[in-house]
Length: 128
Length: 390
Ligand SMILES: [Zn+2]
Image 1 (cartoon, protein in one colour):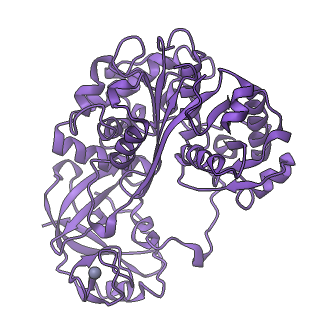
Image 2 (image 1 turned 180 degrees about the horizontal axis):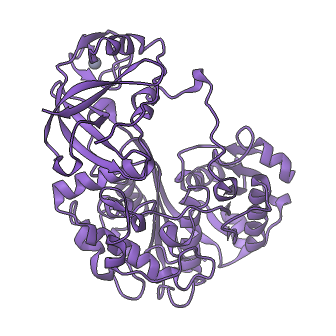
């Protein structure tokens, strides 16, 4: 499948470490020191228990497809998906390096990265 | 007339335009307002409460209040996308019950078709929503977001594209009688599933139309309603909820209607089988399917079987829905379908729907709105409305 052009994220005070790590091809998750759970998207305040004691940890990068679609009206059709990480939360992403017709809900996927227009890297997933 | 309602819908007006090349957005709001006031038998001098959402130009309701030269004691610009106007009706009931206003005007209008796709403006960096960098770079276009909900519903419950197509078929049966509808041709299940795929498994005909237009409703106190007579429609219940991605732990097979449906039915003291007519938000066919399940019209997961075989067609099925043709065929002004849902329910309860789709002895109607997007964040709202002499 031909690849598309990836727009840039807009890092802010809360998310700068996520995008810095992504440039090193590491997927970070925010964990809560109080309830112990991971959440997504990353916040300074845990959405699960309200604690402000949160910390970055590197994720396994492994998960499975929760749901997916192929947007066919784009100049280069692409796969939009939710991937449930083995750490718990699900994240919106793209699935790349795949044949759309072979994808299935529940399929194991692993993280990979794509360059964005201005030199960030975006975590996406591919079948493993 | 019954007087046990806290407030009544006295006026409703759907702007006839579907492509407003020759009108401004403010003008469309104003024309819709005047249409609803005339329908109610009121004038703009009577209005003391004004409600609008983000489609109104200017800051909150102030610019349109000035454009119309309204004299207000109450205003509310709650924004939940296309469901905002149902929430405004509910908030108007609360404001009227608390004596904050007596005649509340709610307007919607916009012209995305006339403006083309050139209106997108960059949001200032500080105002970007916190999730945006974790969504926008992946291309989360609206049909694709709804497609993922449909895909998961199919996976968990065996729902089929043919079943989803029946929702469009039913809407098209109704739209053939609406001279203002954008799509008036009756379509078949085969035509829907053979239309081009936009985002698997959503076909072109699973999607609503894109249209310009507007609408307005007037909510009034029982005292004002008494003077205006039986065309007023009682507001029996209102419920609202926000469903979102919950920190990454979510389920796309249901909507916020799982909260608003039971709350609204409890407030009204009725059950789903009491409903004679339903206006159900229909941005896509999957929106309707999940909503009828969540509201309790059928068991969870059985929505496919429920909507099939014409069960949503007036005069044919058990739950006549969107008898104006809905967003799927008639009109989805400025990508916000909540206002037109309220308006068609008012027509049904007044006996003023098109004779070919009018529900016999329509006494109780449900209106449901889904703003934002299922698969990310949605504002859900349910209203239950009652004929004045019911
Ligand atoms: Zn926590």
